[in-house]
Image (tube, rainbow, N blue to C red):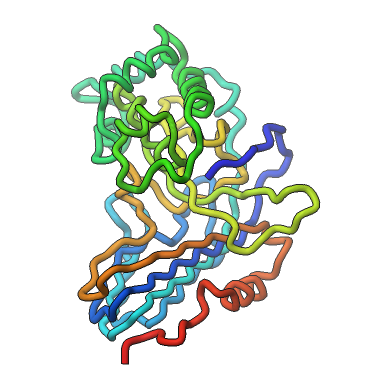
Length: 332
């Protein structure tokens, strides 16, 4: 999602948030069986700690299995076997987000060609996960027109992080944020041609450009703190899922870039997980038996923990219409 980010340097070293992600499926006819893969559990990593996490599901699944996926993201398989006309999930977490190193913004980095050559070498001295994220993926293919466009940022011998920062700013400036311009299945070539989309599209574009130049980039899925207008209260359910990019740099590891907001993630980005593209970390996807047509509604609340008690916030969320039980919550 798009927002204006403060560029001032904060002295805080961490920030605690409550994050509540609500999903409601309404089916046109009863579903007799549904199976879903969930990526709704925040991933712990160097700059984030999960203090509390729970997922409530109605109807309650008969089977529920937690595991780590190929990329190390916490995930769950659920199976609902009883007939149901709606499926409702509330993923609620409290996380500590830690400040990123200042070196990500100010330190030098190797020339981008040097990093690309290191990734392409065989055998390569780059970590295996970096080599994996240098390859194309279904939603971030390698397009020659994207590579040529990116080259004006990646001039000869330019430091990797400087060039990536320039590319991020160009996406922010040249592409229009437009929620009506795309869906989760919009091809990258269409986004590039139309010059509009949402955070998912801009992240795929940036990843594709970096990989087309021989660099390693991964898709980061999570949330971003939004700021209400002056004098207005922070609203429950007014936030959204977010996406950004991380590029591998030999001297700094994985460094984040948010092309939607033209900033480098720090204390206002909370992570769910990462993958090659959106398809690897879709918050919820699955298969159903029956159901006819369906409608899905998603609402996200991300709030500084000091502003609300977690239990009270969760109770307020449950009282809202999105998660209220319809008159016919399940099939007779």
